[in-house]
Length: 292
Image (cartoon, helix red, strand yellow):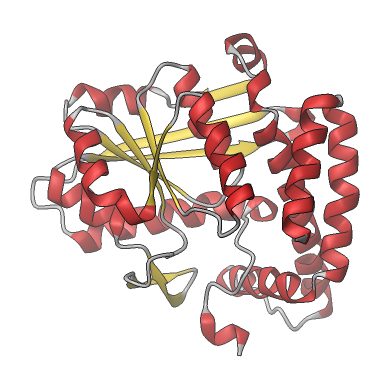
């Protein structure tokens, strides 16, 4: 019930108030969520602690604890802004993109499509991946996104409706394999998030120095279809601006192994998450042993 109220309120605000006002209200609500939602706050702090250890910092030190708490608080606040941005996506147009979005290495996705095999776009729960898909659709690229439906039907409908209105083709996880293959055969993009497994059929990999389960779909799909892998991360920067960073494509043929592809994917995700740690929205322990 709280989640429905939270999403519905931000959806209402995003359309009826100036962005600065919506952000201010989202900040207040998100800060309250940070203070009172103990279990979710704990999950975020545990994940950030792993990142700190990966960088050679000791999460037990007072100064590092303070840094972790600040990043965790920023994560909650930025998630509120993420929702405002997504729900206000109907206001986006090409003029807005020209003035507010920096497209970095966009030639990567043009190159991927030139190979006529489609491309798997890899991202993470970082920045505003939802808005990234909308931006690609506005730019005229054929984009399919694989999504995990929200458990609450009303919340799920809010998200699906917003995606479809902006020209995104939505593929639910339960129906993803066949429809993804069809999209790639049409030389379209299929966007997948590779930093969290939601299928209970993942693969064990080392992520930020610790073993965890990541989704096998991105690599398996690229290898089986021969599609290239392209990276795309849409993040917020200062002054209300955004940066859409692309990289690749990684050619999946010519003897490239799954292990090599996973190494490239994990390195790229780690690189981007470390740049924007308070925009990484994974709200439960990614490494299960930490939650025990």
